[in-house]
Picture 1 (cartoon, rainbow, N blue to C red):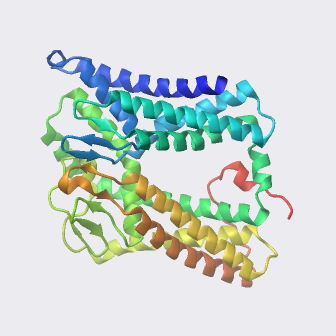
Picture 2 (picture 1 turned 180 degrees about the vertical axis):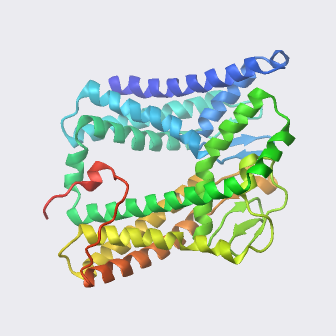
Picture 3 (picture 1 turned 60 degrees about the horizontal axis):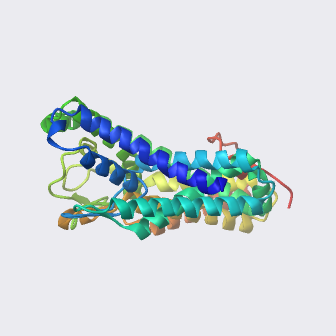
Length: 390
């Protein structure tokens, strides 16, 4: 019963936050009296559903792209729900954890699906099945992590994973973190160079104070998407900004774009300068990091085995980037804007091939020459860092 209540409460809290922000924005708007509170309330619920990556059918097409920054909000609430369940139910073994988080995830998914069904109408129709699936997966991952961390059983779960596999996953996490760090740096440089143009776009919108605040929130929420799009570019695949458009190393072609300040960072149409190709080394550098981490964490193993583990780490990190690329893309409307963002499977395959090959070669050479240099890497999640004997 505690699990059902906590899952329902997590959904209610998320909806309540969306309603408070949305209705407050409507109330503060200059022409709030021209519309009733029901319209901003429904739109707020739609934003909450969109934060779960739920496609919403509109009169002008389908909205299926999710600002990844919004995804963090329901994820944080589900994580807190998992921690609360750990304090309330105090599971003592992994079997109990599995039963609790399974029920929590399914219940939360049902709550998201019911909300999608109830809120449909007047030209806004979310997909209930997609809502249930995305809500369940989000609650399973975020709530499960919170439950494991707070129950103290994360270490036990890590101990059940074979030692070599744990070190391989550590290398994959290191490679993925390296990718994200480089992508964020590149995006920051692009935004800094495009700041005057972004400022002109903001002025052209001629929004009031509240509109500028909402525009800023949307821009911040889109930053993780843009980081992933930059990384998609570095793999050689690139990304789309509409049907028939392409932004990649082979050239840039996209036509007219929505007036959205963060998009000022997109390079102008045409061929790219030669110096821009330097970003193509980012996946290779991430592969080097993954290979060196696996090499250091598997001392005394045959070079062939270490190279195989490093290759697996690179492939896992590349596929994880492909998953992020899929999450960052989708439809932003009808016709031309029905395809926005990178192709997840193409990015995943390209990154996996590049990082896996480089990681294997680096680990092989480092192991053959008994290289013992040290890497100063960001702290990784504790369960991935635990060591145990074979």
